[in-house]
Image 1 (cartoon, rainbow, N blue to C red):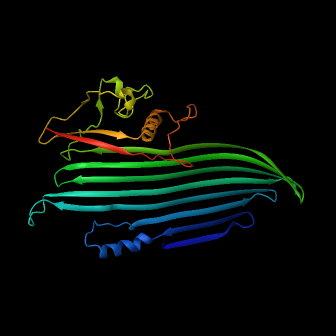
Image 2: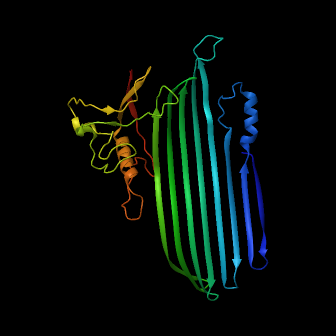
Image 3: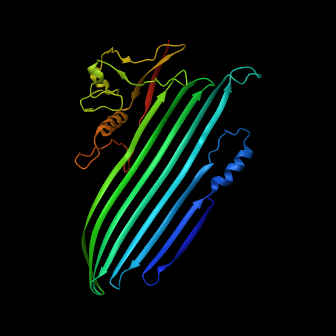
Length: 337
């Protein structure tokens, strides 16, 4: 990885205040992008390394009030980027060699970011040569973001546009007070108190997909309703989720009709039928672990995130970590009007 670094340190107020700053930035993508443009004939061809870079900044400031009091502040900021956009893009022409207007464009892209921000400030006071006090305040923020996008379209219409995004956040703030007593060279006694606030969003998942015939048609709706309480009623979903009504869940267990055949009816609002208006119906079979994960995610999405609400545990089947491993099998039907 090619990078540049800069480092500066020195006094601000001689004998009292000093600083130390270091920063790095990679420019691998700046070199690879022109090379890839020359290597690939298609400007939209695979460019997996064209957007790989990172930046970080470290800063430290120290102020000495007196021989007994000193304040230190430390800041770190870092970001890693590993994007491939478009990671895969190509056209399929349906007409003859002289007609390039009839084509299908397929494009896939990936956005992948890591962000870290940390700050710390601590004050040290010396009561005497053997007794000292240290007060430390810390904040930190970690974010991981991944978005996978897929697009299929012709010159006049969008066939399908979908994306899946994953966010993981860890936020922490703490305040501590430490006392240190060093009576002799062989005895060092420390005690204190610490309070910390942590908020972890291990994996927030959103998914959106639509198929529509006209690019200017904004009346697409993926929300359906049903009076079948055997399948779709869930009392744990006590609030609305976007356009979905309360007590309604499109994820259900087959234990509700195990060993029998169950027939149900759903209703959906459609735009006024026009040429080749489509209704896409999907019935997905998912693993039990994925069922528990999605159900817990539903409850989490409608639960207020404050200090008065009991924390919602998002289901995970990964040992010594966070995540979900599952499988989906989809039965898809397209109804054309």
